Length: 175
Image (cartoon, rainbow, N blue to C red; front, side, top):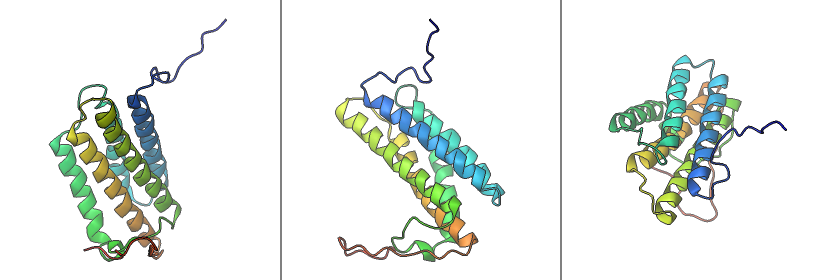
């Protein structure tokens, strides 16, 4: 009988580390998809390549050696701030994650970044594993990057940002 190959050796593991690593792999795959749709935005493609690499660096930074640095956080903040400056008015409100295809994929990346952050927090809380703050800081910043990139992608396609007005919360606009 031929041996079945396993694409990831920890799949049978019950630790949250496995779920975290599967989620960050999914994040990297979504970033790769966004890259494929950002062909009109060469600089964004370079940034997405770096962000994809960072998704794999945070992937191994809990089970293995921390592969995220303060310089990485600084670079991520610079990327965020660049796009934030381009969509400042459009991001003063909570908005619906809709628009062009690239914006939709970037919003999936945003969501995957948040999910990855949650898994990291669960590992730290419930498995008594030290999770370096650099890991969660980078993942949180990546979620913010994907948000402003998505708004920028819509803006470049002349697609208006649509405000979402919550029936649950009073807050509508951000500074």
